[in-house]
Image (tube, one colour):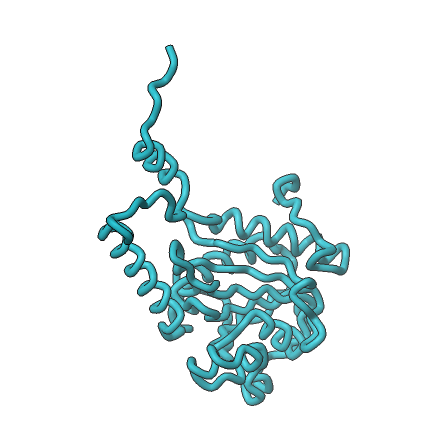
Length: 247
């Protein structure tokens, strides 16, 4: 016996169960129905809060027991400057650069507030712990907690610390369906002002249960790091084949 046909409302309800995208919302006159309009306004407010909420490095440090941390700022002195001058968010404050520990590190983890401190507070420590647990024998630098920071700040940190590769965990730009999405960017032998985004590997949308889980993100990241060490390259020259590799 064939399945009964779905009417349009039932079809959209069924489809919405499988996505966070706002689809098939209908309309009331020439506008969205009130319920959906209020949901959109709430999501927009959450995105704005994520961008402007202050970074709390103590929150991240508390989730990294046994792992030393060091705190730095970018050259953007405040949040407004950070938002208006992306270039300053890519450079370390000169005073803080001088205080970074220098060594023969295999990897430096940088936890950066980016555009969502909420994402960093909720997810970053778990990803650092999970990845580090898979790096037996690696020389891991003290975790750098960076304020008013963008992804490329990791290049400055890596060069200053002498790290072979850098992993930047950063709050991603909030959208209307996610204000707590964390990104992880891996760069091999970064050079400030020379390294480009094409030289990085990115894992995006780390935010269980609706995005990548911590275990999946840590496994993929550790696998990429191992292959980067073998090949001496990250970015477009390094593909994610972690699903086919034992981690």
